[in-house]
Amino acid sequence: MIISIASGKGGTGKTTVAVNLALSLRNVQLLDCDVEEPNAHLFLKPEVHSKKVATIPVPQVDESLCDYCGKCREVCAYNAIAVFPGDENRKGSGVLIFPHLCHGCGGCTLLCPQHAIREVEKEIGVIEAGTCGDMQFVHGKLNIGEIMSPPLIRQVKQYICQSRTVIIDAPPGTSCPVIGSVKGSDFCILVTEPTPFGLHDLVLAVEVLEKMQIPFGVVINRSDIGDGGVDAFCRSKQIPILMRIPFDKEIAFLYSNGVPFVTEKKEYLQKFADMFAAIGAIVNGKSSG
Ligand code: SF4
Ligand code: SF4
Image 1 (cartoon, rainbow, N blue to C red):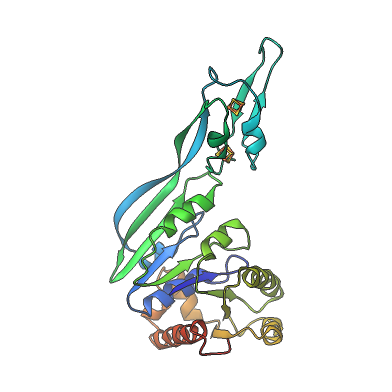
Image 2 (cartoon, rainbow, N blue to C red):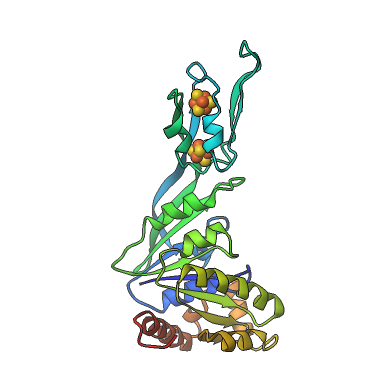
């Protein structure tokens, strides 16, 4: 089963839930797909066994073959190519590639009538894989200044081990990187907090998951502060509230020291295991969920 952990906004405790859930189960693989700011490793301190440079193919134009027809610019949906035909003597002509906008789709290379484009690999980040006890751990780290996180997320997800329970820590928000991370999951846990901001972003995240037709439930973090808006919304939409984690100074203290709280507050091991069982029941259609 693949369970992704997402949240409409950052700072709700998404990684806390991912890490503590992973530590409460057996035969788990945790993938940290929050590649712009991965931090699950700070809590799990995995032993890294392999490190792989992640690349995407970007076009390189051989202008001795190019006739400046502009086809590559037309096919590029991401405006990553500019073509300047120049005057009748080709004075001022040129093709400009903007590698940071390129998604590495290969369309321009495929459709160039003059076969003037070849692909070169551009480094976008690194993927590290290792273990934490019997847990498998994989994360991606996007290079500083790089904006193309979806290709790196896809490459991290290639490590998915189907024989394990897979927990994916998705990036915050509701944009492409989140969709790429959550896609293919059997279930998504949305972590939120009971505040107007938390509710606003939860509503957006729910809309995305409904469109993706992925079953989901909510974990309310710092559940005893704030208001009843999130509860009322979940009731009205019949969204299961899977767990409530109260505001707790000890949890906050452990978090700030990089310690997953299930290692000290053992009662939560069972709570997370129960939540996992409830998710299994929803996924297998044994619950109305
Ligand atoms: S499609 Fe090929 S030939 Fe046409 S402008 Fe682009 S690189 Fe040049
Ligand atoms: S590979 Fe795709 S995204 Fe990149 S420049 Fe070519 S058409 Fe555009």
